[in-house]
Length: 346
Image (cartoon, rainbow, N blue to C red):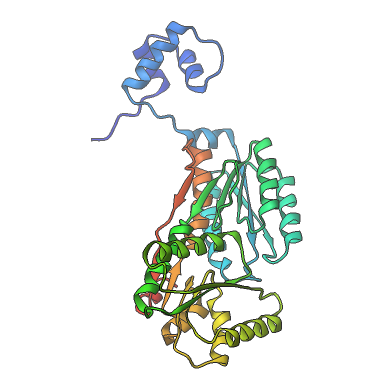
């Protein structure tokens, strides 16, 4: 049975007050006596009254601006899926007064990140959604937002700061432990393992910590684990560095690549050796999936960049439109991708 929709006139009649009094209570404006407020409040609770906040916003012609600080997908393909999530959420909420504007930065340039963040803040947004690749600059942005009462959502990368923000993404420490558990199942007892960071970011350290913690808890003496960071800003330097590393550590039997760039590592790896090593990486990019199907990658961990970005916009929009509380965090499932199920996630 449909629940009856009560009007202000209905509520006024039930409470024995004027429509103006009910309006002032609902909109928290004007002076209302304690006795009249209690009468109206009692009726509102009795009928479980929920104001139509969306209609109210539309009536006021109120708009909210959400600024998104995102790595440029043209420079790093991983972010294309995230951008699609932002675009689709923007289309969904735009008719209700939610305006979303992207500010794209070079993921390898601190200066680009900072400049675009300042451009975004100058637009005076109601909320900021950010991928915080540079920690000190991100902390400064968070402080600015707190002073200006700007809501902040971070996705993909959490950062360690005393300033509150909403985080949407995976539990990265647990993600690292998951990879360790998978790898343990497919390697030999004393195999040497290499953790490979390409353009190291703080979220990769969380994965490494979880990975090492798993082996410390379960198999502390069986495996030597080494960690190596590479930069792929200059393609030639990257190839030379990886080649040198592979020649220096020919006995490594398994690799954990902590971001979406397993395919870049494998291009060099396949030219250097024909060894059958175990490899686990992240993200269902076309390039990574090709190596997965060929058997060069054993597993990929899907970080759901589309979902992360879409929810970031949706949660802020629903907060403004329907007064929904923002969560402190939203951990997404950690999906394991194999050659058999990869096509369903592309």
